[in-house]
Length: 56
Image 1 (cartoon, one colour):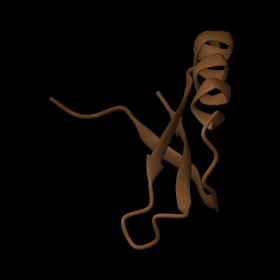
Image 2 (cartoon, rainbow, N blue to C red; image 1 turned 180 degrees about the horizontal axis):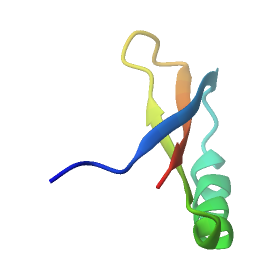
Image 3 (cartoon, helix red, strand yellow; image 1 turned 120 degrees about the vertical axis):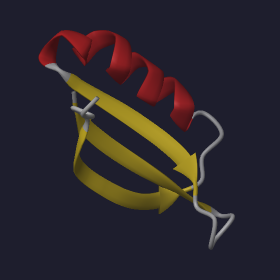
């Protein structure tokens, strides 16, 4: 089975406790546009997060 998810963009940003709320709203609002947003802690720097935009 082939994965159809493609990374469009990735950016490193400063850690923020409420940023996940923005990502959640983006996912709910734009899912019909075949895009998905992800947020992860940066493993090399605990003060940063990685924000990723995917094409589904």
